[in-house]
Length: 385
Ligand SMILES: NC(=O)C1=CN([C@@H]2O[C@H](COP(=O)(O)OP(=O)(O)OC[C@H]3O[C@@H](n4cnc5c(N)ncnc54)[C@H](O)[C@@H]3O)[C@@H](O)[C@H]2O)C=CC1
Ligand SMILES: O=C(O)C(=O)Cc1ccc(O)cc1
Image 1: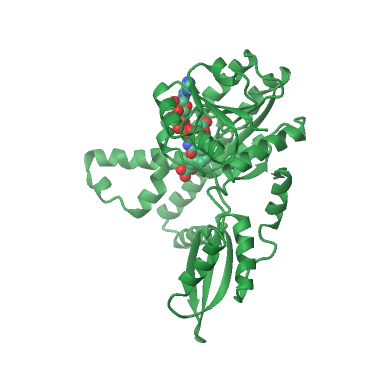
Image 2: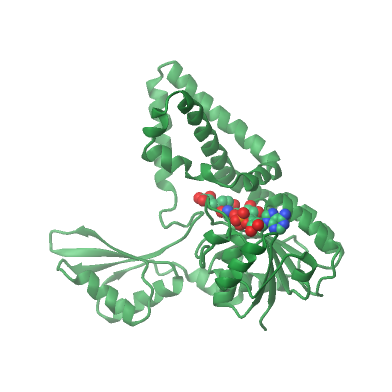
């Protein structure tokens, strides 16, 4: 049955989820925001059916409520929801970048018979607002859910099913404290480091503008996220305070190690630190099974002749198989080439392997690749990690 979904906060994340829900599920989507102008924009692009600036009106009769506000406001909104008449059986979830505090605050909802399941889609941008929202922003990204142990499995399945159908993200279940430690290390700490570096160089630039003029690739790559939204990050840092204090202590120890090695001209130690980092960086999952997206890949032998890429792409296109990337891997002396084909969807990967083999190509693919996900998505029970 199509659900009525209320999205509280129609910005980058709420707006992107709204577009996903409208495009891929039969849900009716009601948007709530303090900005009437943003609600009009969301309505105009087809992200929501109706916009409300009154919370009670927005959540009235909703089957699912998704809170997509800054973290501090998520906590306040949970308090407000406790005072409002919500539909029986309604599930409340959120998208906040921290989980422990929010899950703790939401215990009050449980006392009122309402199911709360914390959520965090692990994709986004340094941009904010409805104008930055886009459909399939979370495709193939991990989407963490943090249900408390006593939440009915059927509620977790119902929410997972809707989120998977809408976003095509990979849903995983995690303990909220575990989530905050991991996400603190791989997202919150890097945002702090980026902001610190931008501010440090900004100070130097005040007396000599060549600091900014010479800022090139490395500085820009490392500091893109230093342009993120101040209110959002203020709330995240305060909410994940306990984990971040430990992580910052470890970071300061790392920097002290570098400082000591440089001050003491310890060439061996400096080389060791960069060598270790280079090896670890190369071990990051190269199938992009990380914060942003994941790819499924196969390789085929092809004759090293012009037009071969077009021929393979057309073959897959004729079967409606979405190919995300294609590239030549190497040219062997025996005039064979190897093409690397990458797919965002496991179903496209699996169909492509069958289709290419049928057409006579030798396909190299990990037969187990995607099998688990494919099977799991049939019953919408996310993997617990
Ligand atoms: N930006 C990102 O990449 C990601 C953000 N998140 C989380 O998602 C949540 C939302 O972040 P974004 O969508 O990026 O922010 P955003 O700034 O793009 O959207 C927030 C929306 O909430 C509205 N809003 C703010 N305060 C309000 C209030 N007091 N009353 C009513 N409406 C209000 C704003 O008008 C805006 O439309 C945050 O909790 C953040 O931690 C999660 C994953 C990724
Ligand atoms: O822009 C980027 O690279 C991000 O890191 C986006 C992001 C921001 C906050 C989150 O909780 C998750 C993802």
